[in-house]
Image (cartoon, rainbow, N blue to C red; front, side, top):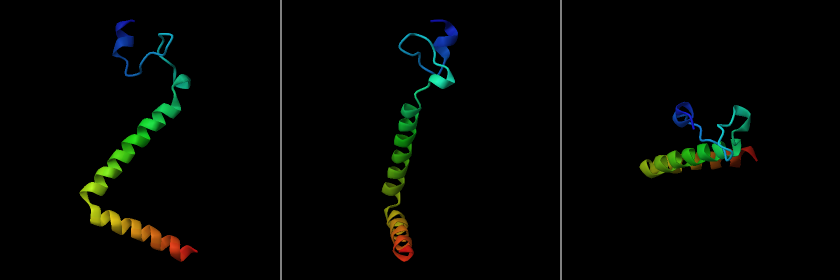
Length: 67
């Protein structure tokens, strides 16, 4: 592995080469993003439970009045 490859934020693939943009596992990246967002939402709910309940109630009311 060259020093440039070692410094790359993209890990090498199984064959030892750094993947090109077209070879990046999009599902894996999306999964990481989704987990990160869920952790942030969980933190907001834990930090602001009353406000979280109000948001959910608002969503429920919107849905109720649409139908």
